[in-house]
Amino acid sequence: MSGKPRGAADHCAGGEEHLAGCRWARISRRDEAIAMAGAWAASRVIPLQIRCTLLAEQYGLDPGRCGGAAKRCRDGVAVSPVTIMVS
Image (cartoon, rainbow, N blue to C red):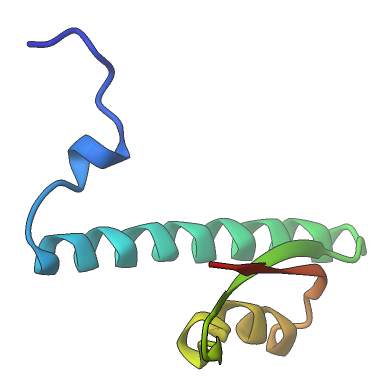
């Protein structure tokens, strides 16, 4: 054992299919955490607001990466501010 802490990079090292599974797991955990926070806030009549960062590719915004922010808006969560980061 190397003695270094096992991080996400170590855990998700592998082929494309494994990396896609790790990405899905991170998204799933994030969505679950936001849902839990939303339920907690709603039960206390506290408006929930989250921050979002979108990556802009050379050709513009990738619609596939905007889905998370769009889902939050549909769920009634205020998404503000939205930061656009140019890669």
